[in-house]
Length: 495
Image (cartoon, rainbow, N blue to C red; front, side, top):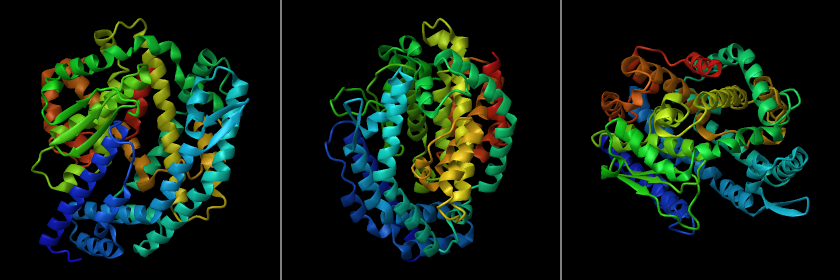
């Protein structure tokens, strides 16, 4: 394909329609409005977007140094690799929905094994459930994960890069810098993690961190004792009142569509489908209750408000592509306000906000350390290393960070394409720095100040044109550092 401005404009338009079609299909299926989830016709209709020739032509256009062109090039390359691995991915999805395990005489679907572990009070049965999941993964799923990994490696070389890591460095991902930050974060928070996680395990599960096993972790985070404090009936009103405090009337946003209707096949977890950005953004909710459900709703509401306020004048790549740490950062900002004692005291009849905040901070520390270790492992995996030693490297990396041995069966299943783990890590850093700035400017209850909402709407209008680093530098004069996450966590755990 040609790379003249007119050709790039045509490519942008077609890519925009492709993403809109995917999001529409995602919305209809997971909102329970359409039984089948049919992607193949969409990919076939837009097959020219991700050919090898398109990738190479767009790669040539990036020589001018234009960030928008780089985003289009990345979009094409990811589409090219996704198309090559789509059949394996579809087979994995089919297996995950069809495989079952018999545990203690009970037939349990593969995807229900993890929730069953979380909801199971008996440690022995949790172990048997975990071993059933591991056996199914090893026998049925991992051969497909290996095929996907090998196909992706071959495709990367056809795209002109020595390996996946090099390709994403060319896309502008700060992989080496973030890797160094992850190493520092893991070292700096080691003692805090061991002491805080040991206390939480003893209180919640009745075992020490040293005695804990991987099948105890889902149970630790299930925390059913907090469910009554987060009732389903108060979820949407709490979101509406929180946004109202920032000067945003959720119900009056014509481009935001709240899907609240219960349906038998509707996914129980909230999600956002930005079908048109900013013209038609779907926030889908089927409230169940409990802190996890509240966190999911507020997280997706952060995405929703970001997309709904994005300027329609921006080019497609600034509205739909760009640095995903930005939209994940906005999602984290609203998600983590649920843990704030000042917010809890205002929005819920909550008896122990300080205790909940401390436990939530311990959980956040676990997940950030987990993602830091996962990212460092992915740097090794995607540098072209032979796959044979990688299961053991995965176990070693995760154990060093979490002090609990994970299963080596997950060494590929736990890897997100496109180094998306880096987006989450940088989003946590973005949220921590921005939250600190908002508290300094507007007080600890910044979420009750319309002036804070005005600032957020101004920043949301930029879509994903700036990177998370540029945004936080512009707003707070700060650097995007995981050290800010450590400070944020230490404050709450100590409290």
